[in-house]
Length: 339
Picture 1: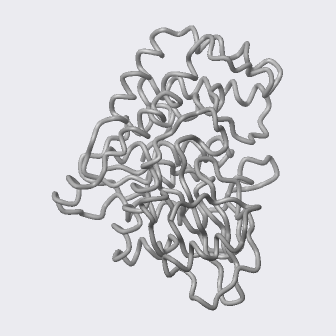
Picture 2 (picture 1 turned 180 degrees about the horizontal axis):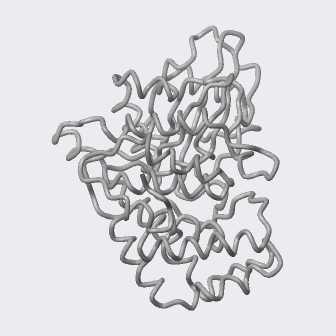
């Protein structure tokens, strides 16, 4: 049965589709279809019946939020495989929703509905403090994920997700430093385009970013979430949850940790909170603090002067300072105090 998920579609057709896959019983009827949150990559809906609610997620061959950007539709299969991998790992699955089922014909995944909550994007607001408990939970999840030992067969058979990573590579390492990428940063904040020129014309920085990108595209033995930032964290009944591992792959753990720290810095976490991450994160074998800091620098640069903007409530001077720090991170990574 061919199926397209919509928020305004025919409830009867959706009911029939979900019943066909035994995701609803024959007697269950849909009362409400609603948008559970702001998704970027996929079409997502919360389906509510008198008995329960579930999350239905469908991938298309483009980015849902930006339909003019092509994206590999197989990404949702990789995400479903991630959930299968952690389904028997108690200290990880407790942080994430349970996958109920996957339809390979329509690229649809059905998930447990964790309940009404919100992601942690409010952390970027000036008047919102990132709580130590939130950071501790984020560290705990990442430590457990990065230190779980998967068999060589599992690692070999798991998708490298390379098509999606190559798309992401352009947005991480290339577009932000292009002098002309069609995106006027003054539309984000007056004066930001001028600030960005210093970095867009830095040929040494461009070379360093491309070299760093090779590390991102390489394979490894550590399972990564792949998009570990406040938009992928949920606060549900004061509990920390993690969603949307569609960028997952087996690679270098420094990428996940670097992205996390970069976002906490942009959310104006304190220096003490940042240093506590280094103390509490359980480092896998072969872990490199220097590489982590380079990824911190990359993520700050691409989020401030790249296309994937965040709801940052920072002054132009605060952004300039972060960019200056980020440039140092990409050079030698010595700016953060490491115990």
